[in-house]
Length: 324
Image (cartoon, rainbow, N blue to C red; front, side, top):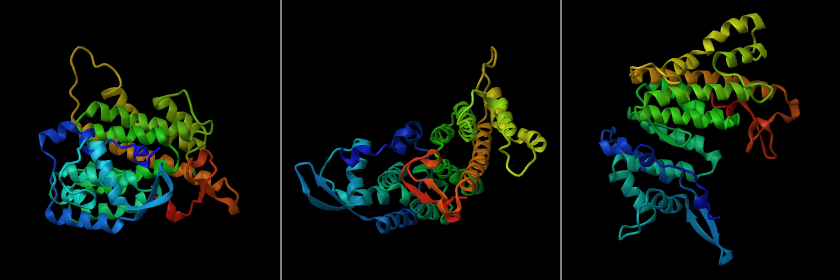
């Protein structure tokens, strides 16, 4: 299959049609746009491929040349008289609306190899931070942020950490929570924030899962002696600090609210997402430490493709590899 078809991405402007249509997204200054494009140009690497009718012949290309048809396919942009390749993308970044810029960045992140993603996001996020722009990239997706500290210190790190631990279900639910928050859907944001935390607890339990939910699931985690460094009585007391997302989901998103429809202010959704990021980070960090400690000193590795659950390909889990 053509690698173009292997790319799984729903670009920013398709995920957030309503916001794009309303035209109220914060724009990017010319300086930010030029720096983003220059950064993409420096990140651009050669790419060679062959065609089915001539498999022995390698066609020389680049990341940006390949991202142009990817952008056109995903966004439904027809071929026209405009220049293709880098010129097409450059025009989007320098002169397009902000959604088009974010689409280009997301297409770039989706195209490159996974091992390049963290460094790519770091240098692109540096641009957003340096110019006090309320946009960030996390796990290849663009997000609007209102609190730079929380985004830089907590939210931006949780998605790659979940991926490193092979907690795909939790990662997908956390992304859905952030997307719902960006769309202003407070109930869904609270619901998926709570679901992501439950998925992390279940994935971290020794059995690989549990039928318990909510507060009972947190208690099961504490009872399994997984709160590292604490005796069980203390851990069972501290477990109360790990249940707030369950409370928010049960009270504001998970159950009916009587005859009157309860309006949930978006601030509670922000609270739920921020709490989920903190708890997910904490539990995942402990899980990765335990997994590393369980391996023989000469073979302390994690599965690059399949995570701690197993897999053929492995990579060493040094401190520099853990994004926290």
